[in-house]
Every structure is written in C-alpha cells, then in structure tokens.
Image (cartoon, rainbow, N blue to C red; front, side, top):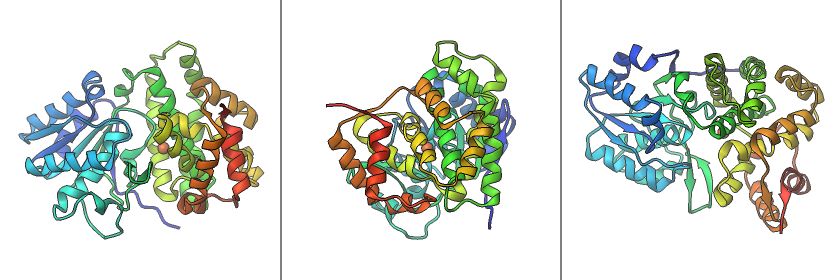
Length: 369
Ligand SMILES: [Fe+2]
C-alpha cells in the first residue's frame, strides 16, 4: 500500500493572493493557460496576473483552450510557450485547461519532441505546473492525469506521462459565477471519481479513506444540487466550499486508483455526441453499482451518500443531468470500443463480458432511431 500526493494544495478564500509568492517562485516567466471567458468572468485570471505582477514575474497568456482540448491544440499552446521562453505553466479553469497545462509543460521541457510523445512511454519531466481550478469536478489540481482528445483514435485518452501540479490554489468563490448546469455536471464528475475509485481493483485503505470522507461531504450538497436543477441557484458559501473539497479529494483518490468503466464508456459519447463529461460519466454510474457483486460495499456507498437505494441515486442523476440518447448501432460500436479498453476493464473489480458491457450501455441510455 502506498500514498503519494506531491502537490502542495491551498484551499481557502483568496488563496491566489495569499500565496502569490509561492506561485511566482515556480519560474522566471509564466505561460498562463485558460479558456476565453470564464477565468475573466470569475476573476481568477486577474488574481493570477496581479500575483505575478506584484512579484515581478512576467507572463504570457494562451486563452484558446476549449472543452476537451485536442493533442493538436496542446502542441500549439506549447509552441507559443516555447517562443515566449516561458519556464512554468499556470492552468486556470476546469479540467480542460488544467489537463492541457500538464501536456503543454511536458512539451516545453522537451522541445525536441512533437505531440506524438504524449502517448509514448518515455520517462520525461515537465516544467512546473500550477493549477487554479474554477470548477469542482475534475480534481485535476490533485491528479497527475492529462486527458486530451485524440482525433486519430476518435476518443479521449490520458497522456502516458504522470505530471502532478507543484502547486494548487483552490478558491471556491470562483465557482459562484459558473452556470448551474456546469456545477451539476462537474459535481457528478467528482461523484463518479469517488465511486469508481472506491469500487476499483487498485483501491487501498488510503484511497477508500478519501472516498469515504468525500462521499459523506457529498451528501451535504446533493439537496442543493437538486434545488439548483429546479432553477433555484445556491448562494451559500458553504455549498461552494464543500463542492470544491469533494472534487479535490476525489482527485487525490483517483490519483491512486484511476477511474473505471463509467469514465471509459463516457469518452465515446463525449467525443461523438458532445455530451459534457460529467453528464457522460453520470449516465453509467447506476449500472456500474448495480453490476457490482460486492453488495456490502455498494450498500455502504449508498448509505454515506444519503441514498436509500441505487434507484434513488439514478433518479437524482436523471434530475440533475437529464438523459442521453443512442441508437442500437452506436451501442454496439461503443461496446466494441470498451471491450478493447484493457486499462479501464482492468480497474473494474468484477469481470465484464461483451454481453454485460452491451447491457450497461443499452440500459443506461434512451434508445433512439
Ligand atoms: Fe472525470
């Protein structure tokens, strides 16, 4: 059993400002990696640039990260960073910019390689990465994973290199301005991380301890998430703090176990149908639990989340996420794809044959066409 969590994490209001010196100490010029809008709307970008200005560290900004960033986009951002002679990367935003930052940091450190190195198992370092999460779902600030869209394989896949951020600055106030549907999706992503980490062949007492704590905390936010799905947006600071804590702890948990079937299954419907990541993984949680023969663990998980049954969990997920539609042909194609995903199958604590996988897809979605 081992526990490895090398990221220094500050989770508090104003943490970017309070720990700006540590952020600035990561290098001599920063490449800030973010999207076009949200980091400006929630103020996180300005907090970071103020912290760098106050500590006399120059920076350049790449703000073109879109949802589910591709290998090609990460290469383009890294080219920009190299040209600007940046020697550390600050990712600001949801999972997309944070994951991209890790891949970009790898290429900046190793300019002799192109994007094909992302999926080659060569031991390589990256320049330092700092992560400023502005959604509570991915937990990327506390994981070594960087998931990119691979157009060559028509799916999403984590790069082969493990890159933990050196520093994570998690200020839950950045969540307040996020749209309600983003909060719902990202919260379910964090929930999926916890359930897939707990029910996982790599789980240990350490990783289960993290899941246990965070799932109990999740039980305190689920009513507010339901209310938000009915149009009553929350303004309770404790709600946002708990969402952020759940997400970061879930990141620590999957750092040790990886994710399993719901994540593997989700990548097809995100790539081919544009379904947001949290909704895509949440679609398959019910069946992941239902097929698990370890009924004691499943009962324990339901109890600490505050659900009386898998059915109640399913109704909660439907209410906050809505449904996904697939055709029978698509179900068959994605079943084939999942049966070839040895890594995700290996993490699943029960055997899955073709028929079970087909049923998991088929019974989790609305069949159309
Ligand atoms: Fe996820």
